[in-house]
Length: 439
Image (cartoon, rainbow, N blue to C red; front, side, top):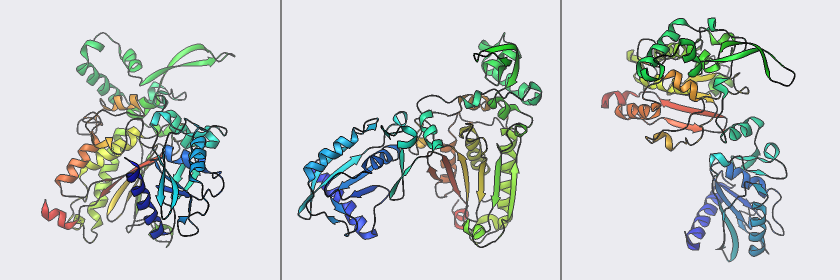
């Protein structure tokens, strides 16, 4: 882009803000009449940690987004450059001077940082006090949970292979364990031909060694015991909620298209359910229940009135499986279930923890292997049977593209993705009556 392109973009943004009367999620305006704004580092951090954005200096929001009298563009451009040096990592925006209505303004384009570079924070305050994120038209200090999730992007989390100290091998389902080992031996015979069941479970990280005591220096002492890991318990356990009572699926059926119809008006939820057990059981039970709910919904404008489910079974299965497989299992998140909310026009499936690593809303649609927050749980569920049909995880993690393809083939609107640092949500539209006629 040349300077004319930047001027055109800045002018477009100013026209939008004049029309709506305030800053936007994408653009921050600061007057900086005599000195650089004290909150400029907050904004630089917020755009770098979010989706990027634009900064305009020398424009007055309170005066209808008009140029500030006496604004020194050259001086403020230098001050903005110096402010960028006060962040870790250092922010390197494009900073240009652009003419506007007889004055010169400073226009900066701040790119989103790579996941491995986040969080971007004001160095003097440190990551937990100096990291910001954009919310609406303002900058909000990030929570400890959000900062921890960004720091995890710099290394592979190992929450899924944490040994569950109170669990024993008796807490695993013999049937699921046998199925796992048989499938792994069938697919990887040369690797596991001479390996005992115990060694295989250790190699697959379904179990780990736990020592009875720790010495004063923090080392291990006493006799080692084999205990399930979190991944092993979730994939193969009899009842994982014995140890993690909130690692469940919490489902609710709302009477309309908004939560406000319940929370503000006092109307009751139509139905609720909580699904427990290992992941294969939770997914199967949740899908069966949601199909029953959608058959009985019979809402105007949808195809449920005739007793046909409003949602394809495979779409629900893929979306719920993905939520459980890729959710955050850090100590801060194990008290939060996966939420499934059914409205008359859609289903929303929400899990704690946003997209991980190189995976973004855009790369979800690309046939490229992505990153996974829970690689050992992911691998186990490739070989754990889903009740009545195949394995829990099919097509090696291409579930989102399967969802897109099915919805497209049934002439439905595409699923909507909402991703943030601390949560991920997929919204699946109900089948409208006219969609049935087109199919």
